[in-house]
Length: 187
Image (cartoon, rainbow, N blue to C red; front, side, top):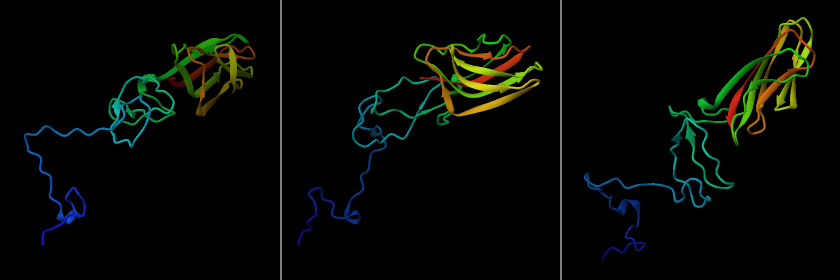
């Protein structure tokens, strides 16, 4: 009696199958997903690698498949952080009540600042507060007691408006209030 396979491909069980041997001079068989990056997602993803990048990638459309990104040494980029090239910090000295001083210049068209930390030192004996401003709009207050200071960390980051400078102002005149902001640029 002849062997009859259970399916039309000839394989009844793993034990009864034959291995596939690829010649050593054969070009590698490519493996890839069925959908390109920035295309509407469908099917099952296969790609597990990432793209190394030193700049912010372009945004993809809602519900599209997107690539994983790493920095240039292969570290996965996970918010609230960005590529190191998009980190930023700035300092300024504020002294006139209500007058804005620029701490971080506008990040560029379609790009905004995400603030992760702030530090204030008030050299004056006068108690004051520091307004964190998104352009000219006050979005946060920091305490700046006389001859003292304060620190603040935002988690989640404080999202500012695209292409707008991050400014600071004291709300009571002080001899010198030193203001520092840190964060990253993103879309």
